Each structure stands twice: as C-alpha cells, then as structure tokens.
Image 1 (cartoon, rainbow, N blue to C red):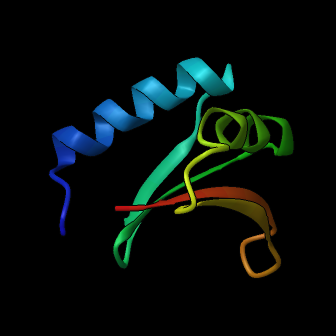
Image 2: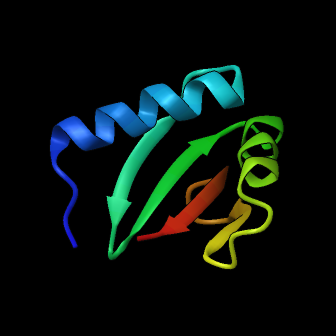
Length: 71
C-alpha cells in the first residue's frame, strides 16, 4: 500500500507533535519510518506500545535511530 505525499506530510506533522522535534519520515516497503533522536523515537514507540506492528531501534547503516510502523 502506497501512501500519498500528502499522507506522509500529515504523518510527519502528527508524529512531530508527539516526538517534540522534527523527523525525517519516509515510506519504505510497506512501513512508515521516522528517523530522529533516540528520545523522539521512544516517544513514538510509547504512543504505539500496544501495536504489534510498531518497532524502534538504531540503524547502523544510517547511523540514526528509527521508529517503524507497518501499514
């Protein structure tokens, strides 16, 4: 499922409110990823803590923290 550019911008705006900082949001292979600080990604994880399709961690390749939500 592809999300429109407007949808990505809406997610970016909504998640930035929760994360309390700006995020780099992208759709990659059926998941929406937010890249930012460790604290920002943990705030998003707390928001989705009961959703089994949510995950967060550190990307060694990109050298940044991420939050991912499968769509």
